[in-house]
Length: 202
Image (cartoon, rainbow, N blue to C red; front, top):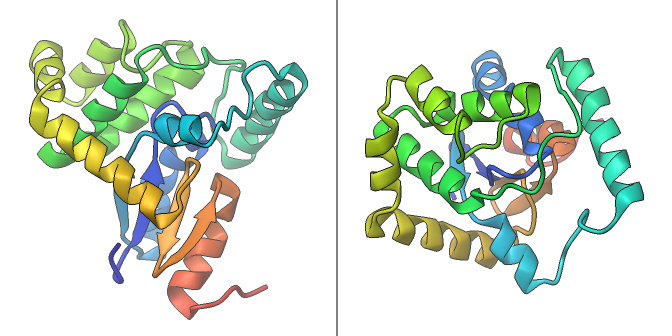
């Protein structure tokens, strides 16, 4: 955790995270705030906690999709819902995010893969989303998939997940500001307030 930035803990595969990744770079530039993008496995943490928020819960799932649709419209984003969920290649999608962030193409790749998921109905980590999103950021899919499957990326992924768990992160997106956690896309304004003032302002 850094004091000069907001740690943005996220998992590609989290539905509400679409709303955050789609607007965060522009918001960071407009607000003059740096965000430290931290991919982790929210799925493994949720399984440990026996937390299955939407699986087998059709009424709650229907609310989630409508809520995302409403909020996307508020932000000027497109959202064709329901999108494919849950992801079949959850871990690969997140390992590609880790690789991309290390190599400098991560943020536009994450945005591209989410856009194809929520606009075109193509799952991140699978074809055709995988190759198209990587090509969009100038990367070769075969190379990236091989690198993302390496032990070094797996170790970074596991270490990030353990760090998130130690901090008390249980969902995506979560914003961490000097020991305080703010869970959910709708808590981003609170995280910004805490970052600037050390408290929430009305």
